[in-house]
Image 1: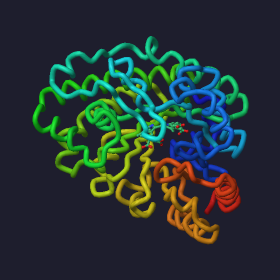
Image 2: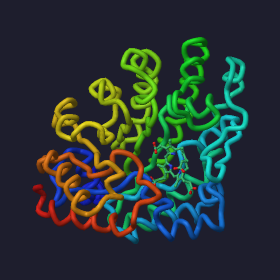
Image 3: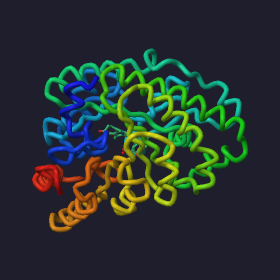
Length: 353
Ligand code: CP3
């Protein structure tokens, strides 16, 4: 049965490749530091406090909807908190980003990781999803739930934070293939359950972020050390019965392989022109992207030229969701986001581009 929201939401229609009245738009990291309303909340609460207090997470999730009228909301959370329930000590350190104080450095470390149900360890996010959807469903706006893909999460768990080379992660993967398999399998178990619970709590679509696998690995290693686990995850999450967006960066060289791992929509970065990427995966496969987030810092004539380029290359085909090629930067002027949304609406009104 198709619900009213599934029929009417241009975002959910585009996820299924159906025609829309105008191109749907939302932005990765749309709730964040570029917004004064967000900075006001973060001045009084830590990142984890916001995520773990359902009312605060719900409020922050709604901020960009009220400000810019996006076609979808994304629940305010992060990909890393599920690692806390697995036994890792996560902290968001001001000016430094995420830090894990007891990173995985040995096979024995993998074996001490727990796989608790999301209903126990991620209850505040599930409750925030209920609060947000109670508000947004009557307004016809869908909510996206999300989680990290196993490689991206493993990279934080092993490096203990962000990395440029992923040297520890890759060394572990090469040196301890059996422990790598156990680690990736445990991450898949936890993420699949978390994503399915987010759909049960009310999320109408799910996005899986594999932000770093493509930047870290060539095609052969991707196929050997990542692909089987992503396939497992997408297969398990398909049971949630909602559209799933498969987002990655740095995977242009083997995009067809990434798309074949699963998901209904492929989220792409800004490195390939949209039509080139789309042709690689087939125009019948819905696609999301792919404005370079840095163009939002540029003068309007340059920003407009880049938006036009994305829309020209989408060519008014059904199954395009406008987004950035990666998360919005904290330096982004709010008025450029306003202009972006207005311009995409104006240019695509009527369904064509
Ligand atoms: O899109 C949204 O509005 C939902 C919120 C969201 C956040 N993180 C909030 C956040 C989402 C979808 C994420 C995903 C996430 N988190 C990813 C995958 C997406 C991507 O960008 O590739 C990754 C790799 C992380 C891990 C993470 N969280 C890092 C590396 C950092 C520090 C870097 C930074 O941008 O500050 C975070 C912190 C974080 N997550 C912030 C926000 C709004 C900034 C925290 C703050 O308010 O100080």
